[in-house]
Amino acid sequence: MVRDYSAFLPGGAPERQPGRALSAIEALGWGAFFAGQIDATELTEMPPVRVTAVHRSGLQVVGEGIDEIITPGLDATVGDWLLFDRERPKASRVLERRSLIKRRAPGSDWQVQLIAANIDTLFVVTSCNQDFNPARLERYLAMAFDADIEPVIVLTKTDLAEDPERYADAARAISERVAVVALDARGDEPAQVLRDWCGKGRTVAFVGSSGVGKSTLTNALAGRQDIATRAIREDDAKGRHTTTHRELHPIAGGCVLLDTPGMRELQLADAAAGIAELFDDIEALAGDCRFRDCHHETEPGCAVIAALESGALEPARLERWRKLQAEDAFNSASLAQRREKDRAFGKMVRGVVKARSRNRR
Image (cartoon, rainbow, N blue to C red):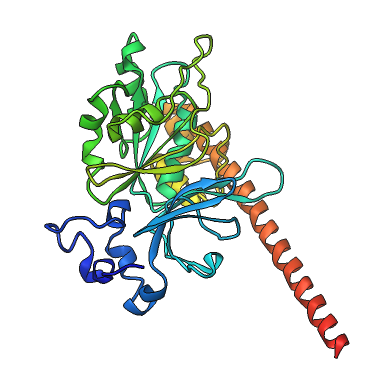
């Protein structure tokens, strides 16, 4: 049982009292945003916990004197904060999220997969080798922008590249609004280069393909080597999965790190705002077209086509914008249809239950 609840309430949040030592949950990222959603009455029965890992067996939650597994059934993901119901864990209340990254789940059943919640900075990791792919980076960046998360592109394996600056220039060309850093994931360099984003009370996440160095970066920032790493294949520079589940790793400086498995497929859905923010240059051009419903193909007065012809816009970038827009629109519509179908099915089930109840009377 939590003995002192004052630190969990708005007035006790660490950003309000910078000189006070962090409590156990503050070390997990607790702050004023979450403290403002609760009151002392709730805390006497339901202490706050954070989902620190997602396992096949359920969600691992950690708090003051709490470290348990909640069996599947709660609509939460790694990084979420809960008010923990000890008697009925599945009835725990999920606090409002500051951010949420998600994707269309792999497969054909049209579901949304929650990846992580309450992330402050998303480190999009790629290597200075064949793994470098602007289209893949744009997907991660659009996902981050849509979730209102600050993205940073991290280029690894600079020690193995003949010209790492070439990769850095290509990454910077994707968006002027995204910081790009190049480093060797081993040793002390990550802690020095990334420390501005890893302050006390912040939660950061590493995403990217398998083998790009996410676990190595996590080890470097955490100052330990307890997360398994494996080398990439030499023939195609592709990595092997080492991280098998999403997990938070608190570190001494007060930051919380999220390591994620490499994602072979990242299908965007309900991310139109993030795509528009990433491709704000094309969106601005589209706003200058003569016709509001311009498809940017053969219409007269098309500002996008004019930019292509003048060389101000690269054809490949326009094609990637079109592809992401079409994918997001298709997935979003399909997911909406699935949600509507689920609501209709639920309504039918409730109707059958009510009918049976009346017949028994």
